[in-house]
Length: 375
Image (cartoon, rainbow, N blue to C red; front, side, top):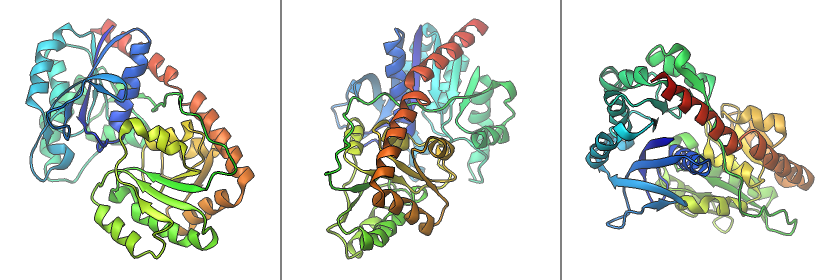
């Protein structure tokens, strides 16, 4: 089957986060299953050396442009749109990793115009919004793009409700969890390794990196030998985080490493002891899935889409939204080596069963075949 996947923006530091990780994983798995899959996206930050391989996956990238002050939403790539117009007619099905941006919305409408069956996956990025531009964008682009799709893939019931709040999609809604490849990196289980607590994500307000700094300051009192590390690109909170670290009084135990290249994240996670993501309302974070795949106990808040799975599998800990609850959860894992070890083993088992990419690829194949048959 000839498949085109479209994502918004690829950068050397993985700034666009989860949707790109998902698209890469899906492309890799579908190619392994024998399909002809091309992943296309806009690109920024590579200079004149735009790669044709990203995290081991062939990719076709086009120079990104940006409308000032609109963030990722203002990203557009005219050359990508021209490529789609020339190639969609020879495509069996398109898979659009869609947000409210000027890369993926036009891509979905181009597939609709070409009468190419297409599926959209919104990654929690499309929900009712009070932004003054959202209503205009939705009427002109988002709603037609959603209604023209054979299926709209959602992660959680909350995302499904949000999509229906934009436009009634009914039976076109289809749940699809994110998956994670089985890690080729050996999982470290040595009791002699120094303990490390890791936050690996964009330093964005919603991820609450400043809470991680406060967590480190509290836990350092009872765990002076533990390292606390933030890793990831600046998403707006970088300056505040670095200032908080500088004023923490524990700079020997607390640091921000900066961005990690996407193909290095698994190896980086493999060196930690506990992975922590303090985010609120995080739909289905790929960084947590990658931690599970490395056999690392993960600590998330109860509003995270993976909280129930982590609790049921005993693969880490779930806290409420407060610093006190988060501190207690991490403290328990640092204190109890046996619980930390068993939680890591459970995390690995959870990643290799419930969140196997083989399952994801099989479901996508069925959805694609249905879309093609319907067309």
